Image: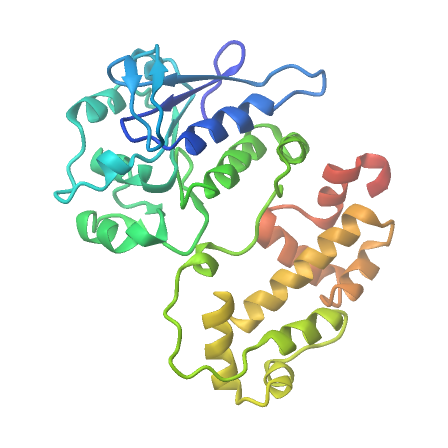
Length: 329
């Protein structure tokens, strides 16, 4: 968690020419919507740029930014959105004024990037030896330019404590919700997600969105197997069971499944069972043992292990976050 100062947590958004309006807006929306139990704002968000004034966006309109890089020195959290103009230069160079601005960030502050904003953090040396991500389309170029960074192009975001990165534009929402959750708990983050009409926590990673070449010979897919599995989540489902529904060998089925879904059959099945379990925890009064049985985890211990690995909460804590202490009791 970033260092706290007197009053509200201060978030500075560092924008550059070519900024995407959606990425700038989502930071203001997520942090701006966070409220305490007494309906008090929990964050102050300010937009800044190395040289205050008009900043070009990747849309057909500019924005006017009144604050300079001095705002970074006062920030508890700094967020760097992407810039098509500056992150996609053939030589991989970054603006000297941007790198100088980043040097003003307090050592105890938290810094995060959205999409190809990770290129800026890497150029400043903030990602060396750390795990990071960026948009899947830019992953090969990122690896080539910054081999000292442990790039994971399949996840939606990474959290290395003081330094965080996210994948494409929409995953910036996931990352900002994650930071709110770390700062103020799941209940506050869930309220923000509901207000913004987004999922409090998305499972799966970026792999499911990566464009894959279409095989030249396309036999029947895996839809029937997936449909069947969803109807039988409360039962044991094996890879052989799924492959049999499509009249394929397990090897062929696994390969085709990953091509179509972006996950292995087992990863997908666990994801669907977690979705079902979370739905039951949110919407029913069933005991945790029964939720585990109906979602296919078998035991409460198994459900607890998988849910905690996915979102860092136990079934009881998750139900409390969504429905309040009385529901969990």
